[in-house]
Amino acid sequence: MSLLPRLGLRRHREEEELRERVSALQAALDTCRGAARRWTGLRLSVVAAIVMLALAAGFMIGTYTGPQPVNNALATVGFASQPPDANAAEAAYQKADYAQALKIAQPLAEQGDEHAQQILGLMYYRGRGLAADHHEAVKWFRRAANRGNVSAQFYLGLMFAEGQGVPQDYAEAAKWYRFAADRGDAQAQYNLGLAYVEGEGVEADNVAAHMWFNLAAARFPPSDTRNRSAAVKNRDVLAAKMTPDQVAEAQRLARAWRSK
Image 1: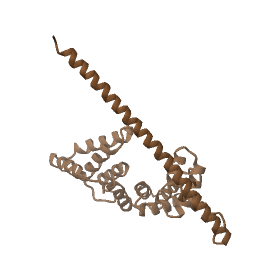
Image 2 (image 1 turned 90 degrees about the horizontal axis):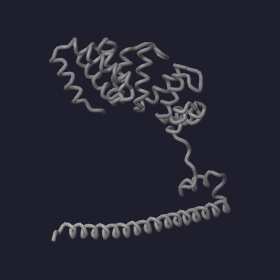
Image 3 (image 1 turned 90 degrees about the vertical axis):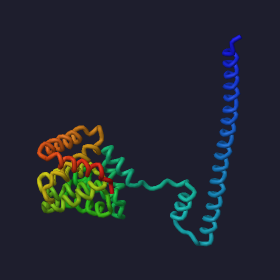
Image 4 (image 1 turned 45 degrees about the horizontal axis):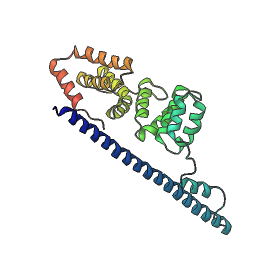
C-alpha cells in the first residue's frame, strides 16, 4: 500500500489545524485591538474632561480670558485642527490654487519657514498669484537658501547666472549651484557642469564637467526624459574631447561622490 495518500491526508489535517490556530490568533488580536481602541477613546475622553474642568475653574477665578487657552488645550488632547504648514502651501501651488498658496506661505515665510520662503520666492519669480517681481524673488530665495533650502539655492544660482533681480555674476551663480549640487539637486548639477565647460564663474575643467553631467544624468527622474537626455548627450560629447585617463578620472569622481 502506498504511503502517499496517507502523507497527503496528514498534511491536509495539519493545514486545517494550522488554519484553526491562525484564526484563533487573529480573533485574539482583533479583540486586543478593539480593547485598545476603547481604552484610547476612554482615556482621551477622561483627559478632555479633566482639561475642560481645569479651564472652567480657571475662567471662574479669572486665570484665563479669551479663546486661546481653550484652543491650546484642545490641541493638546488632539481635538483641535492644526494650522496649515508649508506642505499645504506647496500642495495648493501644485494645484494652481495660487491665492490659497499665498495665503498660507506668506505668514509662514515671514516667520522664517524656509520651505514657505522658497514657495513665496517661486511665486514672485514666476508671477503666480501675484505680479512677477525678481527683486522680491531674490529676497525670498536668498533667505531660504541661507537656511539650506536646496531648491532656493538652485534658483538663486539661476538668477545670478541670468542677471534677474541682481547684477549678473557667474561666480555667485556657480557658488549657489555648487551648494545645491552637493546636496544632490540634478538641475544644479547639470548647470554646474555647463559652468565648468564654459568656464563661467569657475575655471574650465572638462573632468569636473563630465562628473557633474554624469551625476545629473543619474539623478534626473526617469520621467524627466528631456533633461536626462540632455545630461547624457553633453557628457558623451564632452567625453569625445577628453583623453581616456580624463574620462576614467571623471567616472571615478562620480562614483566616489556622496551627497552632503
